[in-house]
Length: 380
Image (cartoon, rainbow, N blue to C red; front, side, top):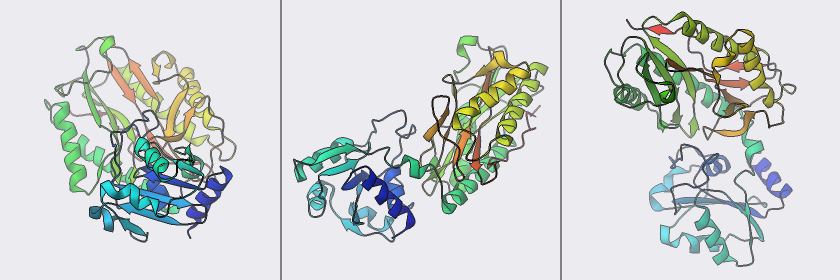
C-alpha cells in the first residue's frame, strides 16, 4: 500500500469514517493515484461552485479503513486505471455493483455526482450516515509529493513557452478569439489535455472603453496600437493544472503604466523572496504585496477580486485550499505550490496582472513560472 493511501486511511479514521465513495473528480484522482482518465472538470473546481454538471458517474472509487479499494467504471474506461482493481459495470447497474462490497455506518462522499452517491448509499443501507467528505483530503492534497512537483514544474515551464510563442506570433488586427484559438492549437499540438479554465488573452485599446468596461473583453476586440494584452492562462496535462498571468503592451506604453508593471513585478518578487517555510503564514502574502506597492506610489491602482485575497493553491484542481487570504491561518510548508496573482487597474486604460506558480522549498520559495519579468512592450 502506498504512503499516500496510508495517510488517506488514517485521515478517514481520524474523522470517524468507515469509508469514502468519490465520483470521478479531484479526490477520485488523488485516492486512485491514476492520472490517465480524463474526467470532466468544472472550471471553478468545486471551490466556488459546488454544483457540477455531471449527474451520473462514469466511474466511482471506494476505499475503506481496512484498505479495500475498488473502482467501478463503465466498460469504455476499463483500461484507464492501471494498477487498480477495476470492476466493470454498466451505468444503470453501477449501484447494484457497489452493493456487493460497500458497507459501513459512516461513509464520506464528495460534491461530484453528490445526489447520485447519496441515493445509492441510502439504497444499499438506509441506516448509513452520509458525511460531506469533499474537503476531507485538503490538508493531504496541499503538500505535493515529488511526482506531483515534477508534473507541476513541467506544466509551468510549458505554459511559459506557450505564451512566449503566442506573443511572438501576434499580428496587428487579430481578434481575441483568434489569439485564444492560436493558443489552443499550440496546446493541442504539444499534447496538452485541456485548458484549466476558460483562457483569457484580453485586448483593451487605450481610449476605446470606459472605466465601467475595464473587465469586459468582447471576443471581437482587435489588437491595435496602444493595446494592453491581459493573459490568464492554464493548461491541464495528466491530471494536473497550471495557472499563469501576465500583461503585455502592443506598442509604446505610457510611463505611468510601464512603471506600474515594473512595480507589480517587483512586488511579486519581493513577496517570493521573503517567504520562510514553517514561519510565514499564508495570510501574510497579501500584505507583503500591498505594502510594497503602496511604498512605491501605486496603491490607488492595486486591485484584487476580493479584499485580502492574493491567490490560491494549485494541483489536481486549479483552485485548491488554502487560499492566500487574510482570514486563513496556517504556515507555508515545503511541497505546497500556490499561485499569487496581484493585479492593478488603470481605469479606462489598462487591466494589469501578474500570476506565478510558486513552490515552497525547505529553505524558501521558488517561482516555477520563469516568463521574462522585463518583457512588456511588444509589437509595433
